[in-house]
Length: 371
Image (cartoon, rainbow, N blue to C red):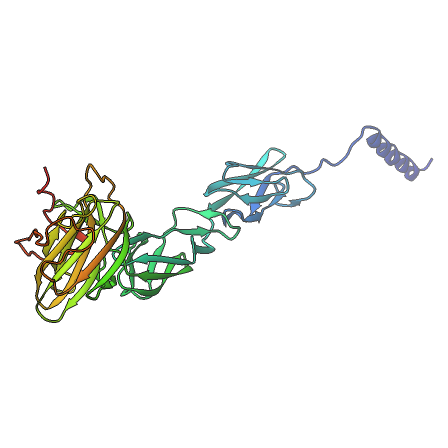
């Protein structure tokens, strides 16, 4: 055998020996795991796809390696086995990708969802002058979830009709219509507000003419009378007005079988102040002896307001119910009307201090006459 043939046989034998011993090249190990994007910010409900790249010690990319995913706070963000992160609640979360014991991380900041809509509880609202209304406004996300704790600013298109506070409290000022706007994070909601005269607003009082008889009813939706401390005394009143062109006398009677009648007569001093010029409790007689009457009271030129009111008593404890109110001018001395059990000359309680008072906070000492 030649030398060349001997070498060839030797190489073949070495190759066969290596095969027999199972000699192979070992696959490279994962040395680094990189997650991208490394940082992201998402609103609640949004998702972000993360990608994990595995490389060996030499920096060569490795493919086909198994990667597992985990979240440091699943109540704030979850991650699928493919690296899809879903934002759940506001917080900062670390997402970890692990392959062959080597890990890489990414930070996901979850922020509250932005306001998508601002809505009033109803698109049409109403309030009366002198009263307030608390607005109810809801902020919602794009998926319809209600968002709490968001800053809302309020405006009224016509402040002369109604004003609105920073807390969403509307105050009726004058009759009319205004548009209310609520804004949060650049989103806007609107509602239409209608203002009408309130029960305490003298501008809305019905005007009486001499000889007129009107029917009405006292209820807890009328204007509340206040005591000298400015607190409600449990009774309410309506408001009527009449105009006296020249000095005259008046005859005003308030009758009711439902409540003990009490009657006030006010003189308008200015647009918003009034003086009490007369009041009556039982001077009108009536079936129960509890009707009120102001007869023969002198009235100088100007605008007057009649306030039908009630006096809770043992016989008629309710402050509410139906009534009739009559107004006659001038007063005819000696007049006795049907149902009057008393003599034609009626006594009148006169208020000596004509201190101007607001109808909305009427303060009078009117209870002293009864034990």
